Length: 211
Ligand code: GAR
Image (cartoon, rainbow, N blue to C red; front, side, top):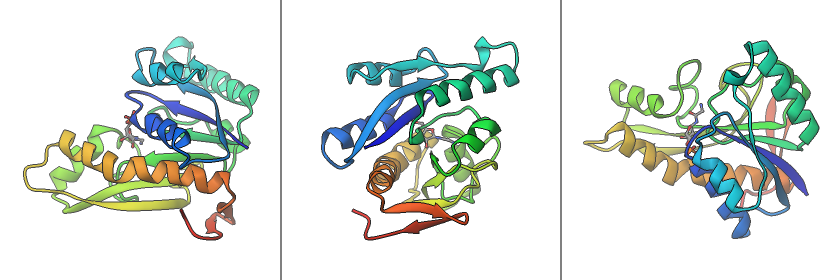
């Protein structure tokens, strides 16, 4: 059984997609140990509570400095000891010490086709604003393992989504979520839980067919 901790910052629609996939049998062999949010008002915490999953609040704002937060966050994660950490719309940078302790065991969903529109400052709605500003005709989402860099870890899967005439950042964000994010992230978790993908020498190895 793959034990996971899901980290969220806001609405938690990706968390909901994971919960629905577990309920619907599209993710198997997986248990959510806890949901961690940096935001007390996150709807994601309500979604977790609705499923009887412990919610944990961990915000940099509650610590004297970033180093103290990083330490506490990493300690909490070590206490929970998940097999996999899932960043499902988590807008706080993962401490380097956590990346080192959970090497190749952290995955992130990003709302663009990496390496476009990613890195420092590219998160949430901003990603879609930048894509529209640039006038790209295709965007999408990427699920990847997390390494020391920002949005630079080995890519697990990507899905393209069309940009349409008249799109606003909000409309485009919703389409990318519906068509790409809510599909890719549950699929990646199921693949990892069932041993269909792993990392070797910085590359994602896929064994067998994705479901
Ligand atoms: C999602 O679009 C996710 O890809 C993005 O934040 C949103 C969270 O929505 N993540 C990033 O930008 C990470 N760099 P949600 O809370 O409804 O799942």
